[in-house]
Image (cartoon, rainbow, N blue to C red; front, side):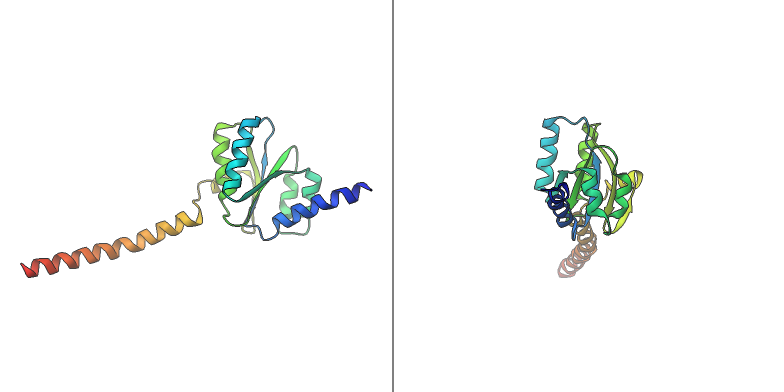
Amino acid sequence: MAKVELKKPVVEEISEHIKDAQSVVLVTYSGITVEQDTALRKEMREAGVVYKVYKNTMMNFAFKGTDYEPLTKSLEGPNAVAISKTDATAPIRILAKHAKTVPALKLVAGVVEGGYYDETAIQALKDVPSREELLGKLLGSIQSPIANFARVISQIAESKEA
């Protein structure tokens, strides 16, 4: 079997993972211990994020001609890729959390909801809460004035009865 035929399934696997992905993040992992990597992979799995190590040439072939093509210029050295189809900022938040305790882990670049982010821009995204957290805050801010209004009306009604 030719080398090209052996590489084709790997490129197709990457292409399948990135199809309809909300975010694709590249991370340098060189120097991470097995225990640290296991903890990172476990948290990624629980969040529904695909985290894998592929050869840069395979990722290069898979990214060509897609929205993720800008990532090809960041494919240098040992890289892993984190892909999320549901929560766009989940891979960034998890990787940034682990990078605090593991200095070897470094966010390289990413494509989040169609926009390319380099290393400095991706660092800014690590503090963006998840969609569910943002919706909860929005609903809380909408509910608060309504609840306060209802309390005031209730107090007015009670004072008129007395």
